[in-house]
Image (cartoon, rainbow, N blue to C red; front, side, top):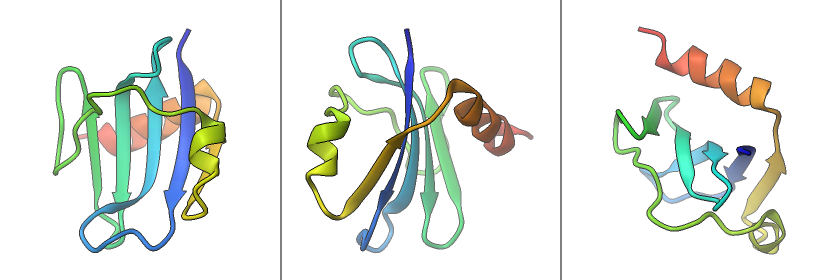
Length: 93
């Protein structure tokens, strides 16, 4: 079963995203991802398409507990509905 997370990267370096929405498979690999950049631009990626510089990760996403130990990240679980609403918003053409 898929899981869904939202994270915010405080003080992200210039040109890198500040917010992430990720859909993860059972092995914690990203299947879809949305990135929001400081300038308000948005990138997204899935197995069939990608925009901007956004790509799916090539390694499993660490656990929430592991990520939350890093003070520069806020991370939380979101619902499938929250992810899907954001995905539909950013992928509308």
